Length: 229
Image 1 (spheres, helix red, strand yellow):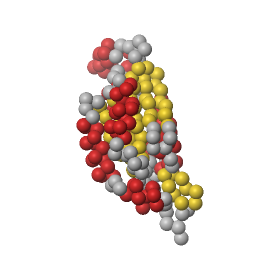
Image 2: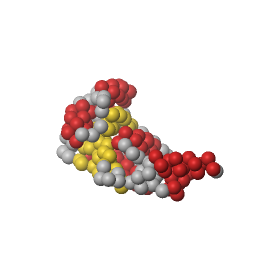
Image 3: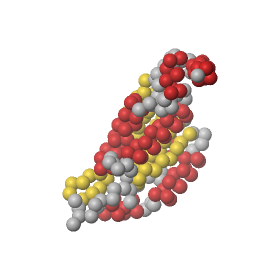
Image 4: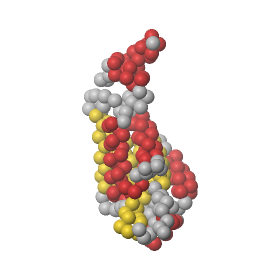
């Protein structure tokens, strides 16, 4: 126990801005909590929570249906990119605020959806003592969007990170198996990129954006629809 207390004291000294010993002990007891001191650390927290959202889409009682329009048994298409962006913003807000997100910090999550295919980004901001604000931008692009392979550099980097002086971003690509989509035009655009090829190309783009710190993530929202008798 003495070792844990000493470790807590050391953590409190390193993260003295607004943290007391009791709160640091809570952090040691619950590893979900996180002391965030940089946008790079905030980006890592968001990546972990995006992985949780990915599991929401694959678990037994999946939330994939929240991302699909199912007006009839024969018409099944992904929702608008803007609506998908809002779902992810809401999920991140829940996780960051209520499930051991960032401690002793004011966290803001808000989406800025624009016209479909033009602008769908999520801003995660953490206010630090002394008026400093950490910012991570999450750009959401669906695989049917014609800018899926240009949005990382053309939008995330040039429109959001560089003009705002930000260093950390995440490019979130949304993919689905084309066979699960009813709309022929949307289905054909999904078919242009397999999930593996899309991920490989986006990871390459992210690495080429250095010294900016960008992660490319691909989420599969495919729904295996039940076969009707």
